[in-house]
Image (cartoon, rainbow, N blue to C red):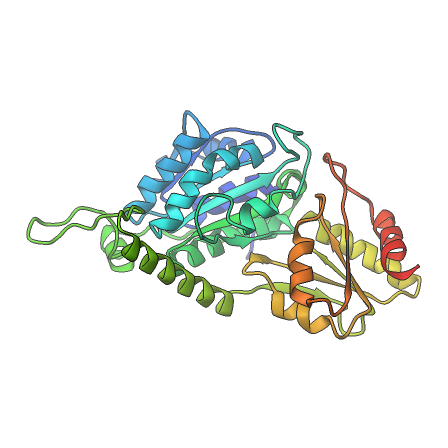
Length: 359
């Protein structure tokens, strides 16, 4: 029988990490994601599963600890909130350049700068467009419920190891702090050293002197080999785009207008959709679950079926750029969002839909 528990989204991340067989967590406290580290400290998994939990001296130290753990093939992760993720960007780029699987959680808050501790979705550019230096991509999962916060820990690790690429759970302060019922994943045993070597033959785990040791690095001093590395990365990214696009559609079959939203705004957008339909306006909602790879093809197919699209975001307009690229001018696309940590209500969204696309 499944055990249903009530907890915050941040707490669900921590519980799921232990249950998914994570080997290590390295982090640093920052609102509104500090409960992840706090919950792990309360769970004391080092006494039960052997998972290492360490509060580093800084965000920079934390991401470099992730680099070290990932380099040995271990299942390691970190979490932070927007300014902290900014500090981790160099390390994230190193992880991508060394092709090291790892999981990063970003519980977004408002900015720029120190900004506010209130929720935001303004790190879309920072994550989906790369953020750090170089041509790289992060597999990016956007949960809209506490259940998905728990579920996406296992999925994030699975995709990260499948493609040897860092993955990010990009959520916001609403989902991180809200409490919902959740069914936690079953316990998965941490891998033995033999299983680790079989799964990660590239890992720098130490080998007998008779065998050449693996070297994990993102450094290449010569331009030609570095270009070949980048071409290999781009081929991998195309494979991810082909195989790993995820999204949810609600009432899209007969929709005249389409709301596109992720995370907490998808939840509020769904209520706005219901209000609009009660008024006779046929609205559907498409929720990207993977922000990268983005559901470009699905959105493009709706461009010839609907009269307009509204990108609903807690920012000044970031995802809307990818929607406009996807539809390629076939249909009108507008943006609606609030800034500074203000979360709009569904009635406000319906009014924006009418003003921008219908009236």
